[in-house]
Image (cartoon, rainbow over all chains, first blue to last red; front, side, top):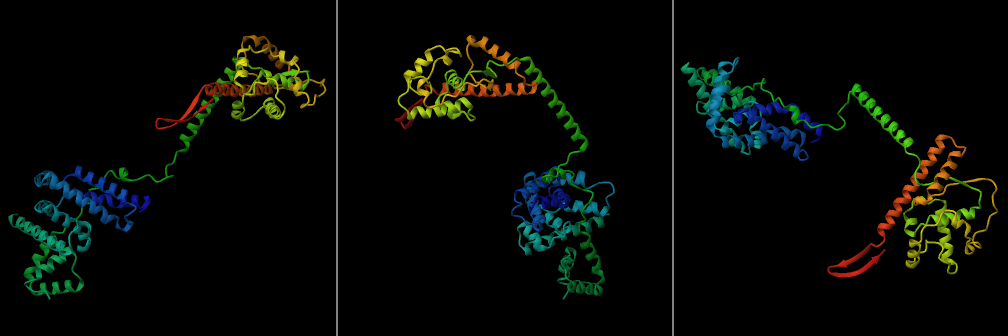
Length: 160
Length: 288
């Protein structure tokens, strides 16, 4: 990967990586650090990373850092922040708000899988490469996460 | 084949976007038969997250790396810098010129016109401006007298033992005697003939016309000051324009500076010992 291609990666993937990191860590400050660090690692490894593999590489680094970061800080902090600040924003639809809350019900790995699937449209195989899981594990974890999200949506709908 | 036992798996695959065309057709055919399950599929489909495109990373510039040669300078700024540089250069040049005009000549004679024979000139130069072997090796641009001296030294080596007239020959005793003797005035050696050199150098006839010759002398004590002034006045009387005279002055200054530096180096080398040791054992000592 050349310098020009690296800069193109920054322009193309920085926003997506930031959104992913933001949802994974639940904290914008941490997400910025994750993005900064991910691109720094990409720059250091640019000789080994082909341009078409740059995006999965970035998400792989960001995924690992987000998981580590989340595990260090603890789940409660993420939940509190998500519930208090990030979930209720003007202009957001009810469904979106409920989904944001539903995400907090997932563990960090399941949340990352759903984000990689829905935000980036990765296949099971690609997610497996990013996360280091097997294809079948990804499928099982994702389905389990979907059921949790669906159950939460249905329960909220029933309450409302 | 979609059944009541596996329809949920199909719905999850559909929500993940992993269901192929055949599977999708089978799923929707199954839902046609079981419309009550349609709501469950909608619930699964609702779990799909949509990225918030308003959320952007605002510090992309900090991630970008500079491409070589990409930086540009505005033309306006460039001209400002160029004008400032021109003013600085002008001021520095002007100040240098002023300083050169304020400081009159140097301690060294610039030019000299002599009606005597060239041989006398040469002998005078040799005696008044002694140059050692080390001097010669260090001197990158030998002047006329030094070149002549090289030749003379070579002749001395081949000829019979010459008397100690030339201080170029390195002998400790001789050096001492030369060092302790006060430097003779510039005119003195001119009167002393050098018979041993006469056979080697054909004596040219005296040239009646004035001959311009640049004589380089080391800085002499105050005893030579009147002579220097006299020579400066001679230089001033030369029919040279100001630019040439200035150039001549600069040239002699440069030569004199170089000679001065060489002298300093020679004096610093003298008395220096270079000792080669391996461990505590001395191999050899080189004395200068």
